[in-house]
Image (cartoon, rainbow, N blue to C red; front, top):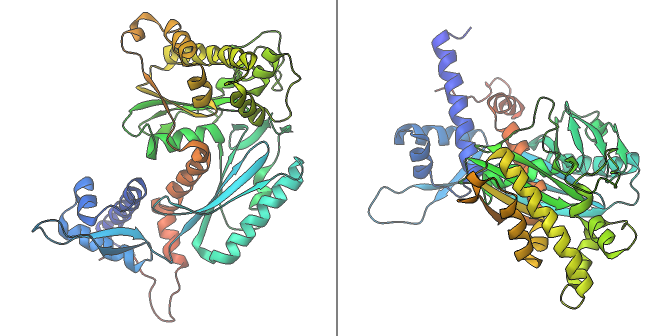
Amino acid sequence: MASPSRHRAETARWLTASQVLATLHRRPGITRAAMAAELQLTSGFATEITARLRDLRLLTETPAPARGRGRPTTVLRPHPEGPVVLAVDLRQEDWRHAVATIDGQLHEVRQRSHRTREPATVLAAVRQSVEATRQRYGARLRAVSLAVAGTIHDGHLVQAATLGWRSVDLTAVTAGTDLPLLLGNDATLAGVAEARTGAAVAAGTALHLIVGVGIGGTLTIAGVPVTGAHGAAGEYGHLPFGDREQRCPCGARGCWDLDVDGRGLARHLGESPPADPRRYAGQVLDRCAVDPRARQAVRAVAISLGSGIAGLTNLHDPDLITLGGLGPALRHAAADAFDTAYTDGLMTLHRARPPSVVDAAHGDEGSLRGAAIVGLDHVTGQSALAEWVRTLATPPGDAAPTLSG
């Protein structure tokens, strides 16, 4: 049995290893010297820990370009035989997936349209992708992280109004495998991506909003989303900022969702609700240059968007607001109307220095990148790293490699 002091030393090494990998994820291509400075490690310990991580097939090192007369250092990169995550983004009309390495880079990005929105058919297609990825990567695949356009409550999908789903069991995606399934709301995960690697990296408290089919988002504090007691926070589209005459698919009246996407535009244009609000909104935006009615509809939606964001600013007091999905296009197409609505809706205390509203950096990939980030957080945690070591091939009679000295 290991002594208490040895156990503490081993725990500290796993913690440091996890921090090194988190730094690589946050800053792909970081040098060993920069990593040591950021984590306040001595040069000797940084050299030791990266050597151990090489032995454990977690990272590799390549010579860094020479800069002056200082000691040569190396650039940290994912090991070619290291762990990966399958990130999946399940949307109204299609779904995407990508393999993420521990530096956060997405590989083999694929997009597929739904043949039908029947849950069993959609989930079977996703499951096939999981199986194909597992066949290709074997034990290197450590988790599946799924972003879904729906309400998450206690780790379960309770409603995906845009898909017409209610209380769908998503565990079929990984059932029968030993892979953990990490589940998150798509807008929440897009906000995580902006806070961790996007436009809100420097913001302590950031509000992210994404307009697609409706509007959702999240508040992040130091890169961590505020998800509420049951994980269902951030359903901003179901605040009563909209027309009380309109009944939302969620069951409530007056939801903001119905005023800021293609359904709101169609109503202002006197047209039928579109089957694909996202695509329809794009078409209306394209017509703005030549169609005054389209411009007026976009203006009305931009006013609703700006005033609602002001209300959320009064509620959350963020340092910065990032806007994704169709939000930037709607805002910029009627910039004056948006800005006036936003300013007019702010409390006096915010109006002198209102939080900036900026375009999201990750664009349409935000939810997929957020899913990858959550998955990588999981597989580079201390317990997951210990489990990774146990999966490495161990020659007969040899001990499994560890981080102990």
